Image (cartoon, rainbow, N blue to C red; front, side, top):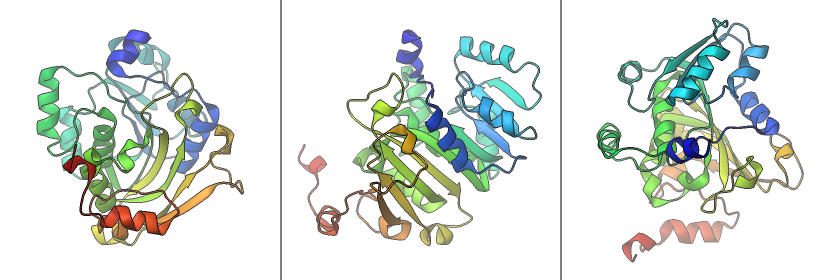
Length: 281
């Protein structure tokens, strides 16, 4: 498991409150075609098929041993189609994305900073030109939005670095112009079993693929923070902080950063500053 985490950065979602919250955000009707792009041990798949017998799930997994385990686990379940696939580079998925997407829903805990060979990095840079190719989770986010049908829903649990770091400017612009964000919850990485990132906290983002840029621009969403424990995810505790953000306004700023500070003066200074750290560093 340690070696697998180093190469694939596979951290499985074992927190029941996180699982329940993410699945609730999908708001499944029961007949969707769902993608799990990095299926792991099937931790998202199991609760979905237990209550939605008519859904169809494509479970992609790159790791050979994990893929074989999934084949055995779902051998008798016709609803789950297990494939050993590199989600980021698969040719068939690229074709489906180019045709407007295939899936009604995507749910995942994608790998964070997964190791890649030099040749694979070259392929990723070419395929995802302009996007930060050294961090795998943002590429998974882009790829899976592409794979959605119009109106399709996505729920990811990922580090919060995409919200404001300069290197993620392109993925922020893509999200703002191609989706309607429903909700972003921010919480400490310590809530995630056996994980504690020193460089970031975690976020759960829920969004819907937009029919047009105009509809995306008309969308506003809430960023939720100050959770005291993981059980508060999806609850309306009085101490939680709700920040409403408008996608058109975010797109008008220099770096499209999702600032989560309540103080408008601080946000204004950050947005309007002509000098940024990267110009000095």
